[in-house]
Length: 197
Ligand SMILES: [Mg+2]
Image (cartoon, rainbow, N blue to C red; front, side, top):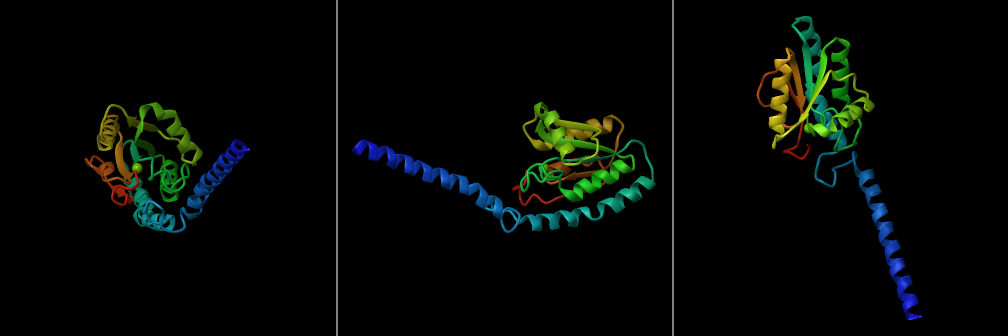
């Protein structure tokens, strides 16, 4: 009798715990993108407003720059929290950057990607971008043996330049994405002091 009651007691507590765990992600998800997030990041709307502030001049610049000509014109994109809304809506396109990439591709400008995602994730990264609606990626360059993301980005852009590309724009959200200026114009999206990777 006692042991039976104990079993039901444990089961009951377990079910209550499961219920609490199941409810938790929904509460977080509902909060995501509406107000300040649990991590202290700005709301989704604030982030998008900050992104648009940076990207609004990008397409007019692209149009002007393409009209001036050059060989193998290309733009360079970071993936996480730049091309994709990784922190806010995993897998979804960051629309102002998507619009820029589409405009570039429409004008025959190569779309290059430099990411600190690992080389082993190459096909997954390309698939993520394709699913998010990105135009064909001309080249993607990923992390090899580097300890720091900034070293990946610099190596990747040096490789692109050595292949003859003229990097007319470089879009990233971490300061390291923009270090070593072998590109013409940088578009630095917010990272809120390193909170967005
Ligand atoms: Mg990033």
